[in-house]
Length: 402
Image 1 (tube, rainbow, N blue to C red):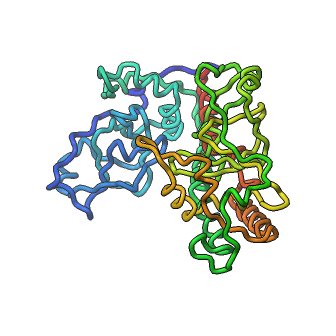
Image 2 (image 1 turned 135 degrees about the vertical axis):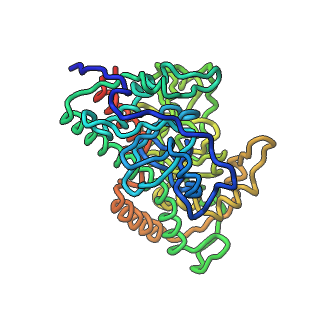
Image 3 (image 1 turned 90 degrees about the vertical axis):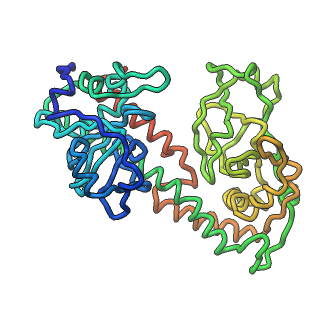
């Protein structure tokens, strides 16, 4: 269903551009909150680097004063990115932002923010933006942006749907930052470290630990000429290897015929994948499987353990431990980008606790992960990138995108 397209200037009291930023003499750590482009995320404020200005400066620069309910839009850089000024910012000022003041009763402010952050909204805002190298918004380009205006009830419904997707996305990002810290803390509590070994576990090299592994080798040398965007074999990249979790970020493929010709090693669910290049070096995760047959690149090491001797979850966090990574960094080489060879990797020391202790670690970690919404130690089904895609898809659907 189509809705009337209304110029943004008709949906608010005023649209202004914030002034040039204050000089150092106007900075005041106890003063008025001062927002810049770096403080504006898509739909939220980033306050970790919030600056403040003196009250005298704030009172002098009335044009760029902010009030709860105003909407701010980034002018340069992340042009068009918008956020709502929340309650609690009864006094605030800004620079480098377009300020949409006092949205009218005909528009629900959160709906307007979601629309401005959608691909359609960003396109509408930037259509008349100026700048030869970087698009710069001004009051004219923002004022002329056409906003689809369904009834208020429909605006609230759309905003509520996107609120849920946004909340899930932020929770996913937060969990991904907590997950490695949680796993490392549990690992250290149960096993100590490679250099500090309070439980006197046996020390062996990684190669010795994996002497009976089904697979312990590098991925395959697949060049650009070997790839095919319509191929039926997934090519897992370095970008897919997260710090303890599979990111599932890339989109590279090759044909099955090419994979046979290159004698590729096909991945199996449960394989431990180790990135031999930063960042960080030797981050490891468990491959959860893919709907397509999958192979990986040469700078990813594939480990398929002997389950009678090694638990893959335990091994993943052994490799992700700070001490193992520090040893790997010392063994790395490369003039432009550090890389650790599989040979050097195999010579690094690791702990070798009894298998029942390894499995106990995996079981406890799985229970902890379940408390924060993970399953089987993998974010492959609820990763931030998937949630972001879902949110974008919802946004496109709700705002009439293709």
